[in-house]
Image 1 (cartoon, rainbow, N blue to C red):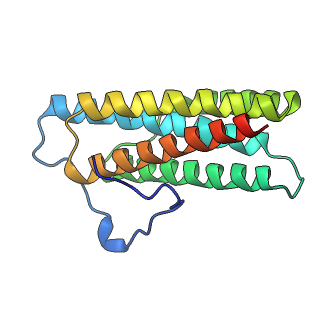
Image 2: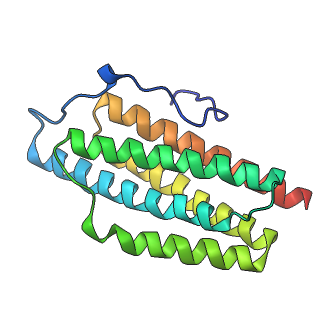
Length: 170
């Protein structure tokens, strides 16, 4: 796996980076890619909402870190949404349920305080690292999509590391 810069929040995209995909792929391969992209997109809906509802209006370093994490998750969401459309698919209609789950986890952890926010974020990102790893091993991605999944997994590893450091520092 390629080493990625974990401090990069939003990688550059150019118009030529977008293209239609999947032509000539066998249906079983396409189905696995579709199922996985839908899963990743839906989970990123939840992730960005968790961070959004953990934020307070205090201009603190902690909130700055949450804003950066939320923005990074929004980038992941956009990555997968664009990829779904490039393959000719659409996001899952019931993703609103994950939006609600993100609201509940984010807002509840915010009410419980900084330690709860960090523990929720570590839990979320650890699960994301696990899911991304499984999908990298089990899905026959096209090269461009694999790079996106690898980069996003690297971002999630960076989030776990950041939140663990903050939790240890008190």
